[in-house]
Amino acid sequence: MELDITVARVRGVIEGSGLTQGEFAARAGLDASKMSKALAGVRKFSSLDLANIATVAGVSVDYLLGVDSPQPALAARAAARSQEILSSAVQEARRLAGFRADLAFIGVQAPVRRPLKQPGGWSWLAQAMDLANEALERLSEDRPEEPESFEAALERAFGVDVARVKTDDGCDGLAWRDDHCMLIVVGTTDSASRQRFTMAHELCHLLVGDDQALHVDDDVMHASDVTEKRANAFAAALLMPETQLREWAAGLSDSEPSDVEFAELVMSLRVSPSALSWRLLNLGLVSESRRKQLARYSTAACAQLAGAGGLLARLTEESQRERVPAGLIQDVANAYLNGKMTMRPFANLLRTDVNALRHILEQVDGTEVERTADEPAFAP
Image (cartoon, rainbow, N blue to C red; front, side, top):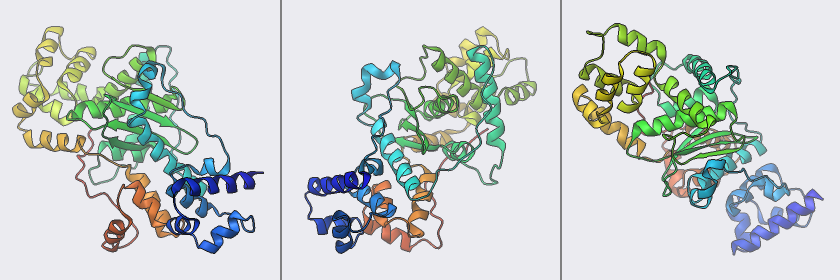
């Protein structure tokens, strides 16, 4: 029964492609005679065959197998804008999740990290603080000697894929979870601090399991329900750790930070002046009147005060650049290099031409494929 469905669906995607059977087989890396025999039921499609056919056709392997994968429901707060959001961020999430599903089908599993202990506090704030402390401990484990970006740190520590994509709908970011992957997608922006906060916010949704499948946030800075408030509190505690801030405050020249001291901390933590001023107030490290004074600063003004204009320019440039998850690139590259996948899926992941990718790979010595972009290092 499943074989009949698979054959029927492969026939359907071939017909829908506008290619001849032989042309489609060639694009999928199959011998024409093997394709004919599989469609006639004489031989079975291998897992690699189906993964390549799915890639060429732009469908999932589950579809070819006749499995009706449930479509994740949008978070309730974003439902009214679902059609707009689906146009970019969610489409990219589905695209990347499809690669993970295809990799799983050929036996390549996404990185697995042991789950964090679920927060047991009775209030959303206590839950956020407990989870942030657990997450900070995890981030410190197996930390590489070389500086790593925030995205790379999240991928290493939590086994998530992190992507940046151009959006035209105002979506800050989303969290996606299915049987094969955990994924964070954020929109490109000229506000690196907001993008960084969004990634931490979405990480909380993944770790707690909010909405289970897909959680879309069109404005992370204006939290309304408990899950959003918890995610924001988690992000603040993760990016601005209490221990680090208290040590910093203990070394101040006065009882409250000077403008320069505050600006240097903004650039060191790579957060917004507004977020940091509130965090310092909540920890009792500044007064309300001083918080209001500090919150008036822009990130650009802090960069100028701290003599960190070059850093801000680099952070901004990076936040405006699209990013394919590095771990996913590595896994697809290894699947290709180990003969489990053709070059076409690899090229499709990177949105490049097969010949261009072949030229790039010819310049690479060994099996490790690394990003060459200069990603700002993660701190703390």
